[in-house]
Each structure stands twice: as C-alpha cells, then as structure tokens.
Image (cartoon, one colour):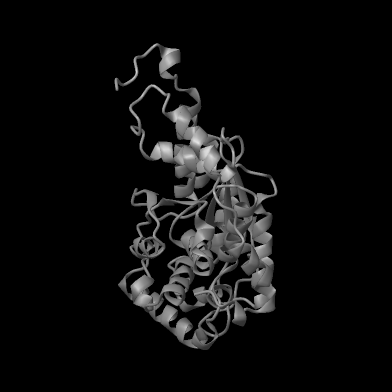
Length: 343
C-alpha cells in the first residue's frame, strides 16, 4: 500500500527507517534452542513460553536474553472527533485517567507494581485535542511527523522489552477509521462498542467513520498521511516507538484494538517491520481479530479484555518474564541427574 512517490517530505526519513529494518539474530535463537533442549522437560512442552524466549533472544540479538528493564509505555492523547458523540465518557476523562495511572489507582498501575514492570506515561498535548476528522485533517503533516519523532524517544531509558498501550477518549473510533482506510470497508465493518456505547452510539460511530473516510478519500495516499488525516497523537507516538525499538533491537509487545492500529500503519508500509512485535491479546472489540488476520498475526492471549491502557501487553510481559525465568533457572538433565529420552 505504501507509495513513496506521493509521500509528504515530513515523512521521508520515517519511511526509510521502516523499510531499512534489520533481520532477527538466528545465532541467538540457536543458542536458546540448544539450552532449551537440555532442560528437564520434554522438548516443546512449554509451547508458547519457549517461543517467547526465542523471540526475546532473536530480536535483542543476545544468546542470553534479558528482562532487566521491561517497560510499559502508555501514550495519551485527546481527540476532536469526540464532539460527534462517539464515546459515553467526556474528553476530560483522558486527563483524569492519566492522573490515576500516576497515582497508582489504575489496573495497569497495579499490574506493573505487582510484577516489577517500569510504567511510563507520555502525555501528548492533552489540552489541545486533534481536529475533528469529519471536518478537517486530525493533524497537520508537520504535527504528525513531530509526534512520531517524539514517540521514538520513548526508548531513551534503554528498555530490553517495550510494551505499548494508550489512553484517549474516542480513540476506538479513530482506530476504526484508520483500519477502514488502510484495509478497506466501511465504518460498520470496523467499529465496536469501545467504552460502552449503546446501539445508537454504535451507529453514530460508524457514520462518523464513514464521514471521515469520504472527506479525506482524495488525500489517502501513504499510510503516514492517512495517519495524519484520521489518527491521533497517541497512535502517531506508538508508530514512532515501534520504529525506534526495531532499530535499537528492542522486542515489542502491542496491546489491544487501538495500539494495534499503530502497528497497522507500520504494516501497511512494510509488513516485515513488525516482525519484532508480539500482539498481546485478542480484544473484545470484534474487529481486532479481523485486523490481526489481515496482518497474518496471532495474539498470545484471549481473555475477553477491552480495557486498553496497556493492560493486555503488561500481562503478556508477565508471561515473557516467567518464560525467561524458567529458561534460565530450570535444571538441565545433567544437573538434576534425570535420564534423558532414550533414542
């Protein structure tokens, strides 16, 4: 879908970065497989947990992967399209929930505290919502590019695992609009109940998406330009964090329906640029399964969650920590004096 010939100059460097991604380290994966084969268990018996360790090793480029500094990054933005009544909650809830994250009262705060995950919250001009995309572009190309660049700075603390999530009233509508623009279809194909809209609200969300698609149809060329027309600051920042993590050899875990829309923008430019990403869970938003299937991705968990705020990504990180702990600390057959499988 990417069309570099029509790309606004603000995005040129990002397009280059997304296309110039490094491959996985096969030697690191081989070393993990060799140790795994020595552990006191039948080969492959830990299933996806073994795959998580290989993923960490391959994308960190380490034969002995680490999770000394796993980080959950929550990006928060406000949306002008909320003026169209697409959410049962007012826009000021975004600011209030960000304060709740910091104070430790949110679900993500408690998950991170319990499991020793570093939680960082990035506020993206909450006092200046994006424009209403049914009337004009949500962001200028300049603002969108600057926000992508800001998102790249999320890895400044050198995490060895990055989990991305979001907060933003109205952003399931925004994500749905991005999916429709990137993969086709109408608003009704992509919208869900989000934070709990009724049937009338669901129809209103679909109509709002269709109106935005129609308004910007002639300008929908490169995925980054689509992001500016229909997206949000938190989604643009997540795009930046995904790009930067790939170039810094940091594996990524992506949360649910909204966070996946940032991955979808990257995928539309270069599908291979998402290979370092794990999709944490299947959201209760029905269209999440659709977009994962279109990208050829499989979610790690299916817990019926639709909270957002990085909660599913954090739980997937807990599994990754468990997997790595087992890999590093289980006894080998030799150490435990356990007979191996006879040939």
